[in-house]
Image (cartoon, rainbow over all chains, first blue to last red; front, side):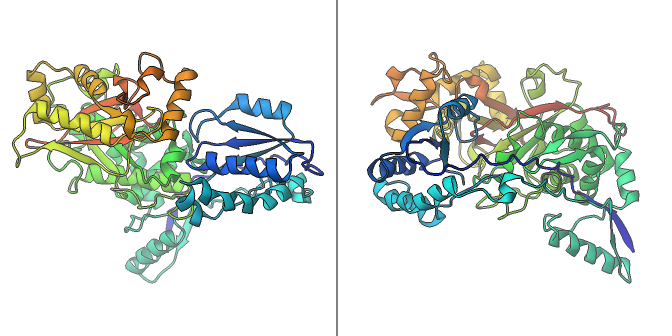
Length: 94
Length: 425
């Protein structure tokens, strides 16, 4: 029998944050549409902004680009969304 | 994961059509229903009150039973590879005895925590590093170098998640300075990126296994390097050729004493670009400088000048430049001034990013102004000479090469705690 030591590092438990309550509808709500700045996300989200304006005009969309590159944090933007937004859509992860 | 609702856009055709608005329009429209549903569909019980994640239980030991050592060794290798704990090459079994032997190389406690290793933040203790070092075939005297390198990788200013997971296929670069390099016989001359030196090969491999096992990565799962990394098994591991350099060693420029030993962990893009020099074509130092400037410009990526360049400079070139009066700082300054990208070569989204970065101060005005962003203008590849690193390495004759990488991932750490070498104590 061969006994060896385990090479794996133990990861910490991940505390899961409960999701925010859902909206009954998006009408009259402010939906932030955020570009994470990965290539192509800007154009995709601009199309979504256009789609909402044409098909669901009661939804108020606010487009924002996250600061820096796609792996930079943007606490100022998160604070703005928390204060003024009802929902957020962010793209694009990969 | 119950705490995040995501909507997927098919990678095929997204990656192909994202260059055109017309191509993206149907994809955007096609995702809207799912997005609205994600925002309005009532939460499930799990989403409202997510249960704590199950922490991976790790047994301290693993047993393999077979009728002979040979069979047990083969079963052990198969088991580790099947579990994604090895790199595909045969590994040395990390028995209690072997790990105890490895730990003789350091005064540091096996229980000491070096850091959490991204992306899954496995805890890296001295013992865990030693286990992976045994698997790699390293010797105990290499352990202090490996530990210091892991300190670099787990530093909060080293973007290890990006290096480990990106599609960019980045390869860590590890180089050693100071007297420990000679004591350990780390190759810094001809063949410095090649095979044949146990220290180069197994220090690099130990780090490869540490990042895999402590960071919990695997190709096609969360290590998305599309082509795989160059030098995937050992990374680029070498020592600076301090003996043949006309200048102070790299770590002395950072304030370390030359008699101290350090390891620097950095990152290179998906290729090492051999620039010029060598024994075949005739060259002059000034010609090679010009080629270097063009290479820096040609290999730049549009990351707001966050990138850095590592120049692995052949000793012959270093000496000729020194004879012409160049210091390392002077070379860096010259390259910063001469490695430029024409405005016309930038994509519109890249120009837009640069304008924003100038407006919010991320690019200082003395580096680039909005007035330069016009036809006929040229744009620097780095914010300043500090983005260019020069390490003298290789032999005579030798080629000079360049790596670059577009994000912060560069740390130098002092080697200490050594017991089996005079240096690094």
